Length: 114
Length: 115
Image (cartoon, rainbow over all chains, first blue to last red; front, top):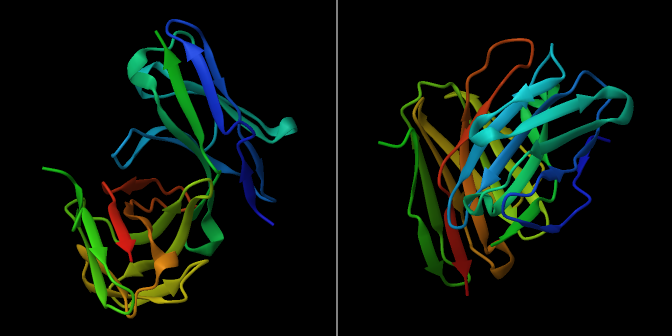
């Protein structure tokens, strides 16, 4: 069955520190992968996506993610976190033979300490 | 102006009432989706539509119905609301590019509370 797992429900980092949010997926075909961010009271904003090609993808707001097929992972990283990055982050895989629906992970809530 | 809008943004209603949530988009996308978000569960797909005449059930369609009035409009209805339908509801659209390479864009969400 297709699934996405985000092992960390909540992470706290200090402002200026590096960040890595983990995402593991289970999908039998070539995965199309996404990271979205949801700020408090807001909708979901697309951070970045992986369809094919270079396994290191760059996104908005200084985020990047690396696709590792051998580990079924698509971890999100940022070298220096800003207080405005505090939000909930969702990893998702596209199931394109079922209407293009997204399967989401449970989300990781990021808190940033001053 | 936002590309994907949802109305209302917040709604409180009572058990048994009929509720309609509306979604409009100006992105010109054919595909539209309704998801619900519950804490700790991520988002789950309720219904999706490829075009005006093509509507499909998602993972959790029981208790919901939809209407695709036009390419730009996709409404979600709760015929008889119950408390466990209290959730945050998102509409999304996608730009189908073939070979499954869609990207979905989300509206701001509607927070629904059923008392």
